[in-house]
Length: 339
Image (cartoon, rainbow, N blue to C red; front, side, top):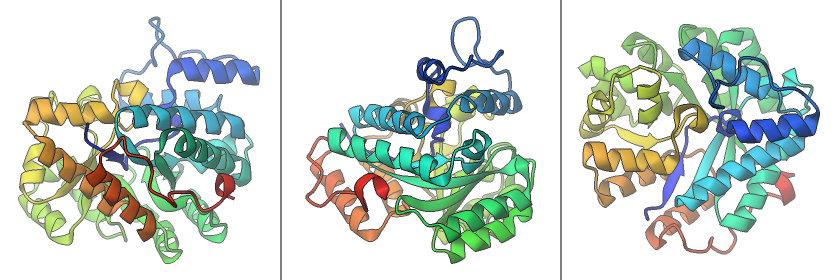
């Protein structure tokens, strides 16, 4: 089993309906109407409807304990598939909407990371994400807050949501995050095409989440490769949401063949029937990638991770040792529960 690392997964979107149900019961709230289909799965009909369903599920996540459990259960599941590192995209806007403080929000996630490291030898860090459709001023607020109140597990800043809102509206937010030493990534090239990606590349980003529609512009593909920008791709998500009709028509192998460094992510696993291990399996089965190709995917993720260099070196060592090796000595977090 090949060691795996993931840079593109949304924390609230990792919680399956069963866990959301347990959390809702614990918090004494009813499940939002319309969130689930008759078969018990999350219900949505298109991308914008998916965003609405995501918000409904996130609305029942209300305590630090909830965030701890979601984080722990996801990291434990990834570790079972050979995962050694995950950067979890967390949304302060969703936490704020239910009245959580930063201490509760990040403290709960950090507790889940620490417990998963202890029990399963997997490491995790946090990317703070602004919600695109909330506008540029809100993104500036999120970035300012992250810059002014650093947390040892928060290593990056990102932007998710409705891609129809152009990257240019978020230049100030990304400048604030970059100046504070946070790694920067942005969703681009999923629903909007090359023009959106070019605008995103004007920001201080080293990674694009998705970015696959760059394939429509050969010069853009060449630029991404030359600049060493990493694409955090999610093939299953792209097919389920209809970005591409099938895996056979997905451009990932062509992007990789053009010299672009790519990683694999599950995006929002229970919504799309994806797992990190499943994405590696997809690439093996659909694209013919062998063990060496897949190790290069993990290497790309470790190289592009926003973690500190000491942890990066530990992850590289584990990649060579194998995913089931014990975590190296000293593979601990910055503090007890990240505090």
